[in-house]
Every structure is written in C-alpha cells, then in structure tokens.
Image 1 (tube, rainbow, N blue to C red):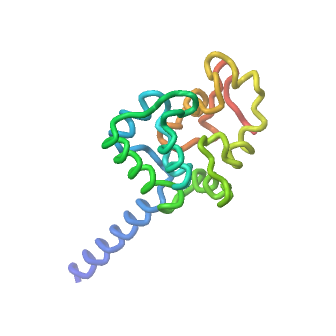
Image 2 (tube, helix red, strand yellow):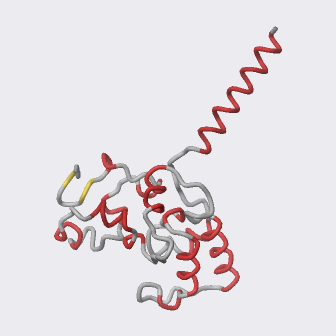
Image 3 (tube, rainbow, N blue to C red):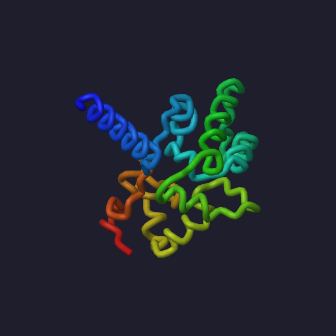
Length: 170
C-alpha cells in the first residue's frame, strides 16, 4: 500500500511540475552570448516577441541595426542567429502576454522592432508622447524605463512605473 501511495504521489508531483514548467509566463534570456553582444547596448528583448523571419532579417542587416553598425564575430553571430531562431515566437509555444503580442503579427509582416507589433501599438497608444520622449525614458523601445519586470519578461500592468509620472493604470 505504501508503494502505491508513493508511486501515485511521485507521478502527480512530476505531472504538476511538468505542467507548471510548460505554462510559465516568465521569459528571460538564458543565452550568455546574446546578453554579451546584444544586451550590452539595449535590453535583451525576449526572443519570443518576434517570429523567425524577423530575427533572420535583423541578423542579415546588422551593419545598419537601427542606424548603428552592430556586426561582430561571424562565429558568434551564427550562434546568436541560431539562438534567436530556435526561440522565436513561431519556433516554440509562447504563453501569456508575449503570446498575445506574437499572435498579433500578420504572416505577411516582418517587424524588426517590438514597437512595430500591432499589439504593442495598441497597448501603448494611450501613453502621452511627453512621457515617452522625456530624458528618463527617451524612446518607446526602452521597456525597462517603465516596466519594472521587463527583464523577467512579465510586463504586468501593476508593475508599470513611468518616470516623473508614477503608476500607470488603464
């Protein structure tokens, strides 16, 4: 009887653990090279925001990466390309808010900036321009300026704190 109870408990625990692992909403970059090469200049955006075609185009145009030459060692570039593609929104299942963002992208669209995603535009259309262009934010792509949980990939509304304004509620 103890063996049956132990086996049942073990199976249930394993099942709950696997379910939780597959349904988490936390998206953080675990790739050290990506952090070193990309996140040294800007936030290491969660790869799940963009589809493969966007990451391919971005990596193909690093010599003009938003007005900057972001090229680097070809071997490392290939490793980052593989990481981005294998973790893109259409490479694996996305959950929560990030899934909603990626689903809003048309199959004919190849956004190169997260701020070009339709869901992103809808979510941010109410934010007054003066709050975006201020010196503590500077640009709509500076997620970490207002989203205190951006690095964890959460972007929860209750964690929005706009500099020189305060909490944001819709």
